[in-house]
Image (cartoon, rainbow, N blue to C red; front, side, top):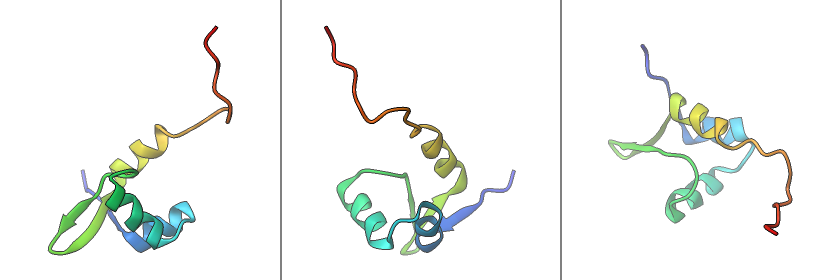
Length: 66
């Protein structure tokens, strides 16, 4: 199985966010897993798809416990 990697620019375009947003998320330790290889930040496509699968929401409200 071939492992496909995205760079920051490609992921930013896929998610319609700025590259600065991805940089901030990395700094804050939130968002997508990433690799740092030879000074380059890379994202594995398999991790991106896993993260996207975990993000679907059906409502912006939270249920209140009674």
